[in-house]
Every structure is written in C-alpha cells, then in structure tokens.
Length: 130
Image 1 (cartoon, one colour):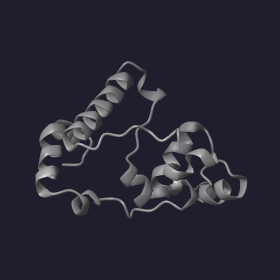
Image 2 (cartoon, rainbow, N blue to C red; image 1 turned 135 degrees about the horizontal axis):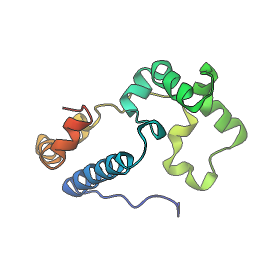
Image 3 (tube, helix red, strand yellow; image 1 turned 180 degrees about the vertical axis):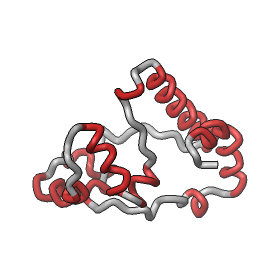
Image 4 (cartoon, one colour; image 1 turned 30 degrees about the horizontal axis):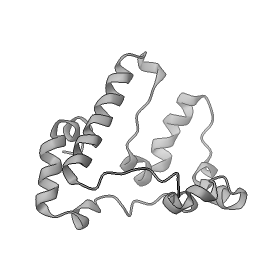
C-alpha cells in the first residue's frame, strides 16, 4: 500500500523513536489544560475495555455503550477502513485482543530487549512498563 507507514527495523532506532514520541506527546500535553486531554494505555484498553472506555466516554460527554466494542463489525459491514490501508490495518476488522501484549518477549532477543530498555528506560518507567 502507498499508505503503509515507513517503519524502522533497527531496535535502537525503534527505541529512540518510541521514547521520543511518548516524550513529545507528554510535553505537548503539559502545555494544555489538564482537562483537555486523556491518556490510556493499549494494554488497559484490550484487557479491560469497559473499565477503560467508560471514563473516556464520560470525558467526551457520551454514555458508554458496549456496542462500541463492535467497531470491527461496523468496519467490515460498511467498509469504514479504505481498502488501500487494510494490508496494514487488518486488526480493525477484528475484536480487541490482548494477543500481542508481551509478544516482544518472543520476537526479540534478550540483547534487543535490553537495548530497547536501555534507550527507552525513563519512558518505560513513566508509562508504567517497568
């Protein structure tokens, strides 16, 4: 797909980019009124969707409806995601899943895990991953 994002494949580049992105987001949020933004973790969303989304809906001023978790059905039925991006957005056609949490433990060598942790250590702590 021409819309496929250009991703880094070197662990040190990935770690730097991840840490820099989180730091930039946090710094940007710090300039805004506290009530103007909300942060949720992917792990919390997929492990406890109702618990995670209820405060988000309240913050947005809408009532939580469990049908929100059926996004993938609506996406399939109404083709909400353009065909040109589906090759890298296939998960939008499936329900939330925690299957990819911790997958790095299987995919990365101990050396790469340690390299990532060394580079992104402070962000890993700030974001409750360590």
